[in-house]
Image (tube, rainbow, N blue to C red):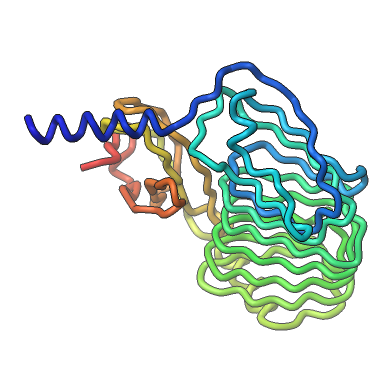
Length: 293
């Protein structure tokens, strides 16, 4: 009885601590003059356009705006939640940033960067995905568990560093230099004049993994806990890369999935730290997998 009481108190405090959207959706504009670096730690649908003048437009629940950090310091904007929020609908953010030089993503969302036209661009996908188009002289890419799709970004030269199980697709006219470790995947959208670093080795490994057998199975997962939790899933794909995204689940709920064997499900706390819960096995097909013991 004592344990049950403690659990109920903890659950109540967790729910109270989370600020829910009031369903009164508004669109507000913000000044982002001299924005050069963007770091994303807020779950939102984000589009950045370098052909537009400086400015940011956010569509969200009206009571959540004050909980979103929109302050620019020394040309840097860290889009983050100041308190734990639960929007009633997806937050939508559109940014015009002609001077932007660097983007770093830390959420399991897809960020679109359009109409790049600059001398230098640095993209880092710790998780999530960045899709980019345009033209740049020097492109620097860093990937851990995320993905950068830059096949439509025409770069003269590119440097690529993949230190996790992420993926980068690159178009480089002149030279590409890469360091690809662990289970990282590098794909070239064209054939550059010069391949340096371990580019040739990485491309050979990618070609090998494309023939790897990956089995996808239907099943269900259940949040068999008393709490609403945030989860992240990371699973293998046929090309040697991985798919990954995050999602919340209310206590006691079940959802259908179709993931590859070997997919791992993590619980994510408020600090973004992960704890491995389950790894999907072939005999989980058509069953309900409980996320907690």
